[in-house]
Structures are given as C-alpha cells and as structure tokens.
Figure (cartoon, rainbow, N blue to C red):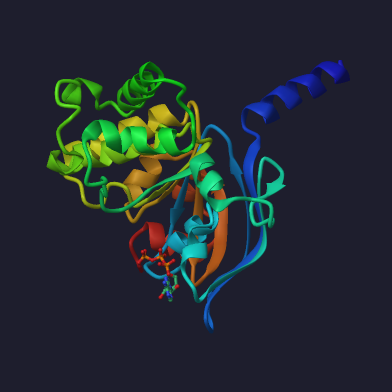
Amino acid sequence: MNKTITAEAQIASNIVSAKISARKVNVFYGDTHAIKDVSIEILDRSVTAFIGPSGCGKSTFLRCLNRMNDTIDICRVEGTIELDGHDIYDASVDPVQLRARVGMVFQKPNPFPKSIYDNIAYGPKIHGLAQSKADLDGIVESALRRAALWEEVKDRLAAPGTGLSGGQQQRLCIARAIATAPEVLLMDEPCSALDPIATAQVEELIDELRKSYSVVIVTHSMQQAARVSQKTAFFHLGLMLEYDDTSKIFTNPDHEKTQAYITGRFG
Ligand SMILES: Nc1ncnc2c1ncn2[C@@H]1O[C@H](COP(=O)(O)OP(=O)(O)OP(=O)(O)O)[C@@H](O)[C@H]1O
C-alpha cells in the first residue's frame, strides 16, 4: 500500500519537478544590492509569474536564469542556480549554449533585420540543429505553428520580420526562441507593448507553451499573472517575500505587503 502511494507521489513529483533551483542568490550592480538571498524552485511544465513594484528586482533575477547579466560589466551574481541539477554558472558552461536551452523574450519585440524565415532559422543554424535545407524548413514551420503565427505568414516568409504588426513581431520572437528547442522560456513583460487582442493571443500561446516548457514571466499586470501562471513569486526591494500557488497569492497571501500590492495599495 505504502509502496503504491510512494510511486504515485513520485509520478506526481516528476510531473511538476523543479527545472531550475536557485539558492541564496545575491546580485549587485556595483554597490547596489539588487537581489537579496533569493531561493526558489521553478517547476517544469508550468508558468511562474514574477510580480512586484518597479525596481524590486524582477528583471534582474529573471536575467540571472540564463546568465544575461553576464553582459552587464558592473553586475555580479552570487549563490547557486541549477538547471536540471547542474550549476549554470560553472566555468564549463557556455553561456551561448545555455541561452539556447533557456530562451528569452523581451518587453519590446526585437526581430532581427532579416526575413521572417531567417529570424527563425538563425538560431538552429548556428547551433547546428538542421542537417539540410528541408530540416531547416521543417524547424521554421514548426516554430511558427507553435507560436500561432504560421497561417498569417506562410505566404510571405521572405518578407522582413520588422514589417509585421507588434503582436505578430512578438509571436515571431517567441517562435525564434522556440526554434532552438529550449527547455525554459523567460519572458520579460512580453505583452507590455501589445494591444489587448495581441495580448490575449500571446497569453493563449503561453498557456499552450507550458505543456512543453517551464515558462517564467515578469509582469506588471495582476490580471495577467492570475490568468497565465500556476505559481507566483512576489518581489519587494530585492527580496522574494512570498512564493506560492498563484491561486493562494491572489486570494489569501501570507504577507501583508503581497496583499497590499495585489490590491493596488502600492506599486
Ligand atoms: N544595468 C543596470 N545597472 C545598474 N543598476 C541596475 C541595472 N539594471 C537594474 N538596476 C537596478 O537594480 C534594481 C532592480 O532593477 P530591475 O530592473 O531588476 O527591477 P524590476 O523589478 O524589473 O523593475 P521594473 O518593474 O521597473 O522593470 C533597481 O534598483 C535598478 O535601478
């Protein structure tokens, strides 16, 4: 009997196992202590939202998860961050390879000044994911389909990516991130430059993506966090004050500052 329960518990824990484990992470920009002792387990195949007032460190912490902060000279990261149990800050890890596994979508859609096709094909090409032109065509089509953009662009793949609407450009950037077969997708306010219709499309897409990936999204919209995420982390002045199921955070948070923030009393 006990054995059965243990096996079931194990299956359940595998389904929602931790993809990223961060322990005692501190981040400094010169003398500014931007992230203070943050520890978190980010689950696979689910959406985790980072919320909190402006300047609390959401984007800084998000950028630690694929070492984007390496590109900022004055930034120093301390602590441990593991992806599938392996330290991503280990000297043997190539940050470019890491960023193919942990993709990122930014606030403002930023397609390359290239064709729609080449925007998607670029990553798979440099990472050697396609053996032939037919392979590459397949990857491009599949990424555009998964990003719910294929039907809108299939007849104009040679047109510039920058000629698409804002919402289409953001889905193009999501398709570009997916094309390198990542395991984690980091999204830094991916809908803040989009209108409500494009926002709804991207949110629908995020819900679809969580079937395959671990998705982490920074958002200023409480409604968006509540709609798209299963877990929510509340940041305040560089600390992660609370991390729990999204339903709990938005109905019965433990911390009074979380309560004040989600009800719009500050931030
Ligand atoms: N490149 C940088 N150089 C110096 N300080 C920085 C840099 N980026 C962020 N900071 C500082 O780190 C702290 C956290 O900023 P961060 O952008 O991570 O917050 P945030 O919660 O994402 O804010 P917002 O919601 O406004 O985007 C702030 O004090 C900010 O001024």
